[in-house]
Image (cartoon, rainbow, N blue to C red; front, side, top):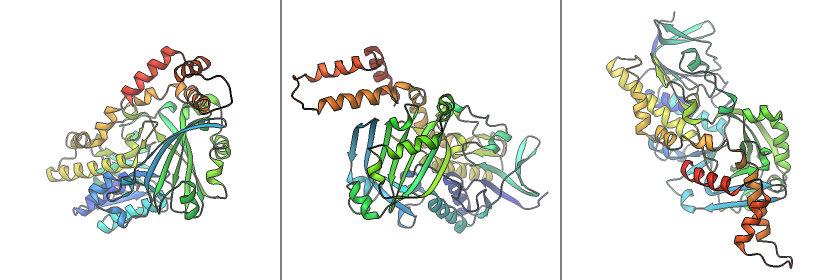
Amino acid sequence: MAEEKFTAIVVGAGPAGSTAAYLLAKEGHDVVLVERGTTPGSKNMYGGRMYSHALNRIMPGFWEEAPVERPIARESITFLNGDQSVSISCGNMSWAANPFHSFTLLRAEFDAWLAAKAEEAGALLACGIRVDELLIDSGRVIGIRAGEDEMLADVVVAADGVNSILAQKAGLAKMFAPSQVATGVKQIIELPAETISQRFELEGNNGAARLFVGDCSNGMQGGGFLYTNKSSLSLGLVINVGELQRCQVKLCDIMEDFKSNPHIAPLIEGGEVAEYSAHLVPEAGLAMMPQLYGDGMIVAGDAAGFVLNLGYTVRGMDFAIASGEAAARTVMEAKARNDFSRQGLSRYKELLKQSFVLRDLEAYRKAPDFLENQRMFKAYPKLVTGLASKLFTVDGAPPVHLMKMVFDQIKQSDISLIQLARDGWKGARNL
């Protein structure tokens, strides 16, 4: 048994783990940050966009030194149906001004930077280490075992991703159902910075975030995304795992179809694929949240299911960072009391409630169930694009007033008026 004892062992050098390690080390606590990858971020993947507010509260003006790509100045969501598309776009130049609203990022670079900040603050960064077991004494987690090595700590912070083996070994989490997670796949496509700015009508280094729904997921629960980096594009899909199993399709094939879509292909034309990655994404919100703490252990970030997908916006990194902050604050208070029991760590949930994490997840508790509605991904994109196509078509045919045009299009769709009313009511209440 190892003799050295840390205040905290943080497993996983993603945004949640590195934030927790940074704050603990900054306050003089002995903390080790353990990462399975050869470097922080080497095995991590996400769409490519981070809302700034959570990290800015911890590191004001972090963008002045962090490896961020482009500040987002334009948002859009596009409905795809064959050769038809309809986009809703919003531009706001204040989003791309100090203080910045959100940035596109490359995880390998950003995670390495954030972990380095934790190391600079005094945390011990240990990469290339797979944690095999938790050390448990009388029902309390007291450390970890990695190969033949053992490390002791007052608290272990599990920030080891959506399929948290540590949370399961501690009895805090169960294996998730396929319908509770999605598989995200992404390609980094290199293009000159000038080309990106021209194609997306961006000024200077400003960026764009685009979401897609409809044909991009073959009508399955999910969608596509495209984010502009400095000299590359992050293009990908996120599709429910249960849907992929039900339909027996390969995500790589859907991705290739997405790239060749007539509304996507011109945006990536001439680009070179520099990176390909895939990752599981928690999508069930509070329905898949594990027990957040136990005797000697706290669960944070994706491991706690802290991701919010509303269809028109997807958030994960700001939740991860805020949960890492709450975990660190909890450990500091527990250290002051020398109480690392389940009761002593219950402060974690209180801090999450005081922050936006549990507040926002609670506010959108019913959103995951609503987004399981199959009509959202096939019937409605077809309805919207069909209606818009007729609205803007001038071919000499007799005129049709807008109201009749709408009702005629609804009649031709697979959606009844009752279903439309119900879905509209539920969507307005739950999203």
